[in-house]
Image (cartoon, rainbow, N blue to C red):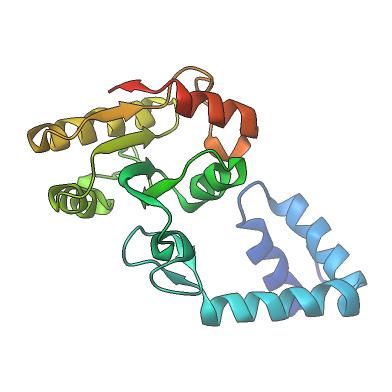
Length: 200
């Protein structure tokens, strides 16, 4: 940024620039906005971030984020434990819950298989998924993964791993655009895709 910015400001810009969707320019704009409104924006944000860092944890059952373990969804006795929806990241759980059309449970993989990025099955929560299905409570696994090359590769790998369990594995149907991500879809599209799911 230059000699006019101190190391504290430079560090703030550098950290903001690492957030998804932000680069150096957006990081500078965000830092400036925060610093201009220290009392109404920066201080509450810093407090919320500190509280989240101290209290938010990963659910040991599904891999989602919450302040309790198990998370609120896994602890909800009204959820249908026979339906297990497999998603890439926590943001996809939030998208599915926002739609309100799915009443089963979730399993967060923590990413997708990607040979280019060096992400193999051992880097994801696929072993935990196989163990959950093998326990016998699950009667259907719904793969709600992105319609991308990595998403489809991951879906096929999971279907192969679960083939010997004799539990049906389905995928979200059309309605999810190719290259689309669940977090960006509207509630109606997610609901329609769930209703029209098909075998993997």
